[in-house]
Length: 229
Image (cartoon, rainbow, N blue to C red):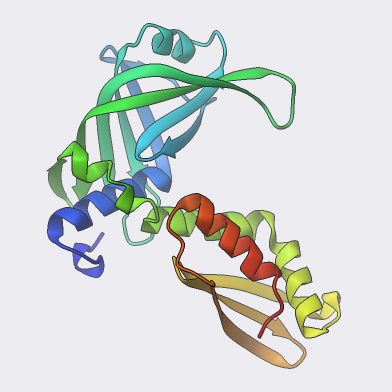
């Protein structure tokens, strides 16, 4: 990732880039007590820069969390322009909460890794991160989170986007052949679509600047559902 494209001083940009990798991972590998532990069946997430892993109750990962084992997590980047970038976090595992699966009645455990050290590799250069910089709430709306938010909407809610455009423009749904979101930030998102009249684009501006990931999600949903003006 080219740090010159990120706002703020260099230390701020490095921490933001590191948080982006965790929010938008391509790969993840875990070592517990210096031995590899498979996490293929776990779901990786994050909460304020702290990795979370949702796993089956009674799994080796759950047992390691109960023992508060020392762990090392390496995350490869899926952020656009960040091929080869990686984040390594080391600390202790711990159980965070239990939850039920959305598609079954099975109970799962959410495990967290509380970082004691953070190291990020960007464009071949390693940076040791002060934890205060890395965990700063200022990095909530990082590039990785914004990218993943758009990818989720386009992959899982594309029909909803088409319906919204059709209802707002008075165009039959079958005539709205493509919808795309782009350039999401804390202030708004770009919306593009194609219908028999050609290609169109508007900028959906939020009524206020989003200050958190939860607020961004709410403003994004409301903006997409609102009439296009």
